[in-house]
Image (cartoon, rainbow, N blue to C red; front, side, top):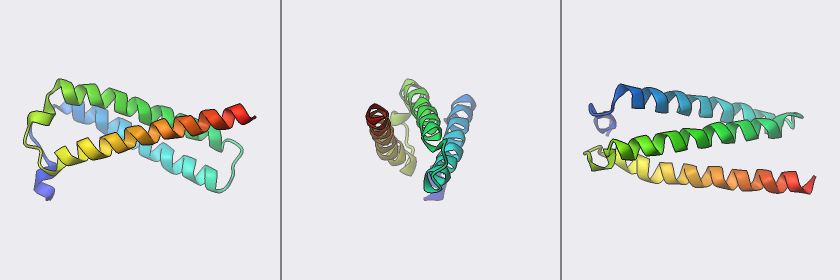
Length: 107
């Protein structure tokens, strides 16, 4: 399965962009999770930052993915990841935005 994770047709700029956004999102998610767990006063603003960066990651990657027509390539397992994980992540960010907005309206 690991050999299918690599596709030589990925442009370097696509990989760099997606990789940097993904890593930034992951680091922010970890920091925001810790802040929420310990109820730090700035936890909610951190969640906003994480969610904005994560959503920006998706709206940056999706057009590139479709513009490069990577869905037509034999990506093996990576194709399934893009389709399922990408959609689940997108819906998760929308849900987090909804919860953040609802929380802001209560105050």
